[in-house]
Amino acid sequence: MIIGIVPYLVTNGNGQEAVKFYQEALGAEVISLQTFGDMPANPEYPLPEDAKDRVLNAQMKIGNASLMLSDTFPGHPYQLGSQVTIALLVNDAAEAAEIFEKLQVDGKVTMPIQETFWSSAYGQVTDKFGIEWQVSTEDKK
Image (cartoon, rainbow, N blue to C red; front, side):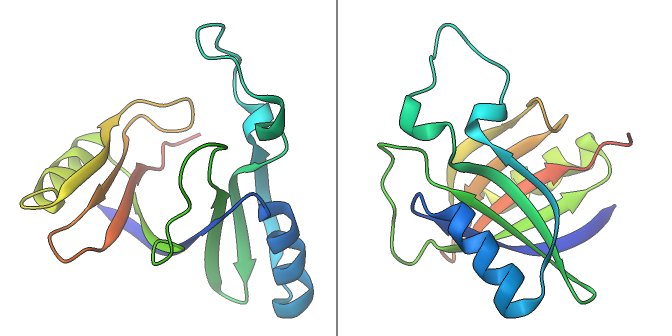
């Protein structure tokens, strides 16, 4: 079942600064912050030095609400109009895949739904209305 829907901000290499800004301006509590440098190393795709401190994913609490944030990867375009996406959190990988399939009808898949080191089913899709979704399974820990 869907367990949450969260605004997801995309920044252009200044994610750490943005997190600090939201802490100060909104009283955001940082729940977690991972950088690209925190990812497991992959010798086939060495991580550029300028990517290591960029934010892979930050999760914050502001009052009773959640907010997520990540930086673009160096060399990937930062697209105006794409600074806010929607993270859809699901507690079952099969349901996440089903929702993803429905969202992609007449839309565009950015990243096919797949297992990642943080989720058993994660994918990115822009629906037919131009809304960008990140479908993610929140696995029981």
